[in-house]
Image (cartoon, rainbow, N blue to C red; front, side, top):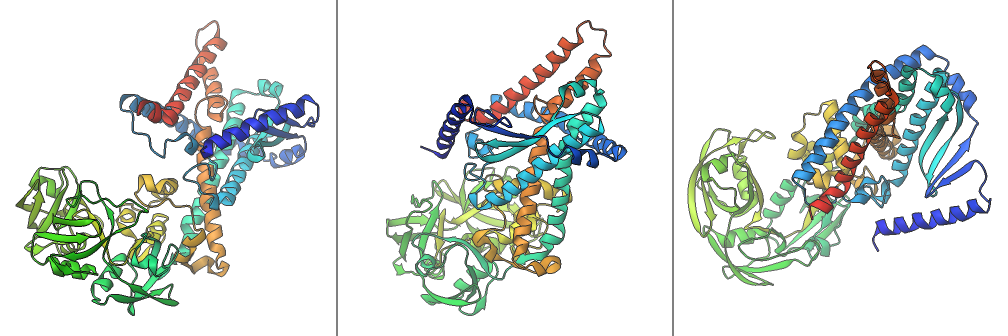
Length: 596
């Protein structure tokens, strides 16, 4: 039984238990239950609301601004959801982790993108969001002389998932439409302000207090690799190879290539040194590679024993054994293969430099570049680093059993200003060869995406964003989904072993490790509040957007020459609400049902 089914079973069991307790009169009057939802009501705190609501002119001006923002977001949300629903119906996407039903629930451990390790921070952000949201409704209720009957919290079984202010229905009917609209908009206004404040602190002094620690951050070691055998694992930092400091993957590869020894001394975390006995393995592969070898993630690697009859233990041995030959006979633990050797191109961008020369988007192998023999992806990248945009170079490619040399006019790489082919590269002949075997954690990339200094590890992904405030907010929304959207591991915040990849200094350096907790609280508070604000702006009842829509529809219809304005208002709001509901259901279940 998967996690989602366990959750549903628990909700049903809770609903049955509370129904029995309510029937027998055991539950107190201030506790009300509807299925798995429990509300706890209190009349206390109304005096506080009256005091907070005293500067009425300020709160009305505040909520007028929020109402304008909410109206814009309501229209944008309506258009976006309907547009997405139409696209899903016309071209159903393949089901993915993003559109699985459980991933629309903001519940750590149930949502695949929200790990349990950040549950306290997410809960804190949710509580802040709910308090300021419902507090806004409560304050504006008193500003507009709407009586508050009760306040309280909403529980999903025993988990706090909401708060509420219960305005008097009679008072609402007496209130003018402008007052009601301001009251409904106050909650999302406060959520957006909390988002702005939290992001301003995060992108400013907090991120400025965090920098990347020296070394190559290790996300993990490949199963059966030399690094794994030496005890190097996720959370470690490789800081030196045979006494040579390393800070990037390029530094690490260069240091390993510079050593002919079968064993290298590896400094970990700048403190301890371990000996790594090297062997050449195939740690990964792409489908359709010419060797017809498959290495699944987490499975044991394939060992490369010899190339063209020469025993090999390192990548340098491999390159030397291949020499100038375009083909090589490799002896592996999975058998012997004869393959063309070069940098494997998995994707070629249409209208890119290589596409313009070859007129193909199919995978191919680059075996020579500007007269230089290319054996590995590292060779090709190093050759590109020595070129300029607009330069024309000869490129030898292997595809469909034959070699062809084409002249390519290079584009400009937006990240480093060097020449650009417009391709994605994967290893040697579609095989990921390594004599060490670690996967890098993009510590510098995350810091750069959050507006900090990622150092040498900033990466092309981070460089593709300009760092403007709106873009920082947009990127932060994507970081928990980074594996799907950006092609890097999901970012849970500065937690667990990830903390070892960073160091503290700057404005909040005096907090020491507390900076990471502060950053996590700000990140998830901003993330949750923005989600709450946007969700509540959906123009569908009973959300705030639906209530604002109703008052707006009443204001418009009251000026029309119609006999039954109430029916027309109800028709407008119900129709829009049903469209919103259908769009949301299509977004959640459409890819699975329609996309197969």
